[in-house]
Image (cartoon, rainbow, N blue to C red; front, side):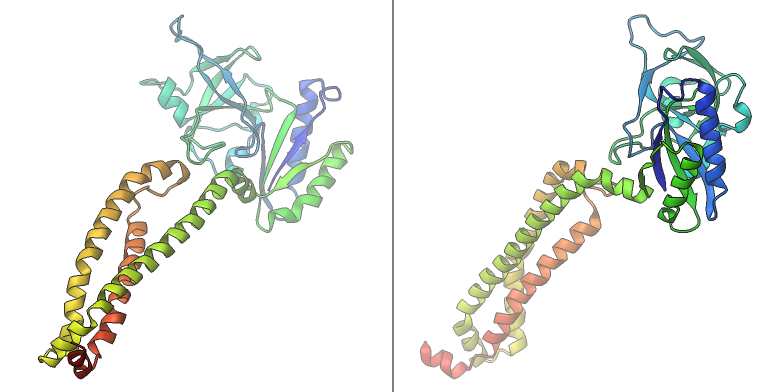
Amino acid sequence: MIAHIALPVNLYKQPAQRIAFERSLLDRVAALPGVLTAGATEFMPFVSAPGRGPFEIVGHPRDGSAPSPVVVQSHTSAAYFQTMGIPLMRGRGITPEDEGSLPVAVVDESLVKKYFANLDPIGMQIQVPLPNVVCTIVGVARATKSGDLTAPPVPTIYYAASQLPTGRIDLAVKTANDPLSLVNALRHEVAALDPNLPVAGAMTMEQALADSLVRQRLSVQVMEVFAAIAALLAVSGIYGVLAYLVDQRRREMGIRIALGASSLDVIALVLRQGSLPVATGLGLGIGGALGMTRILSSLLYEVSATDPLTFIFVSSGLVVAALMAILIPARRAAQVNPTEALRHE
């Protein structure tokens, strides 16, 4: 479960007040029945627009003409990484013991790859202009996505909320049972600390992810409707054309049967002749689809624009429709009475 709590600046003016509130709240929530872990961050991924800001690497001045690098910056609690399932790749995470000590930070893999090339970030220091503070990097976390599943991870710095507190608390609670069953209990614990603070945006992380994909989902649903119409038109068109062509040859089939051809021979002949335009059209269609999939790549997540299963499924459906279009009228043609066909001729 995730939820948002905002501390009024006029009531929580001192950093110590904000630190004490967040620590007390996390201790209370972690003690609730069914809670496995509870953490907090300043900007919850896929819910809050992440805060961005510049930073400098102490001891490695940048080119004076180059702008300061701007990355996502968030203040988190000690248990945030464990609650969200973000593994630490190197070093350590933020711990309760960091409170009262020199400022520390955890950076993610994408930031290390982009700004610490050929450098070991552990133990290095970064300087943040607002507030003007120098933090020591103590760990490297796995890169995560924060707002767009289709976009690559954005370089991120995590500061210790117990050292640099803000008025924003985006709470994350990992539970053994239904997360939303703890909403009332969470409101009770917040009210016990400050009855004037509301709990906003309580939902599951799955709901947050689903909400972040509303626009993409709508686009895909519209495309699904048009794709279904296109598939229906393609199937009906294939069936209608081939059925008409085969039906036009019913007299020919009757004559072939009168001259000794079996029904299977007639059906096999029709299948061979009807398969050529089907194979040609299928090849051209697949080629055109491969060329058009680049337009769809922005709407896909963890699915290739040239997904082989999709091409196999759609192609198989059209082939089946084509075979039915050939077989049904071909079978009727193969059952034509030869006498009637010859009399008509």
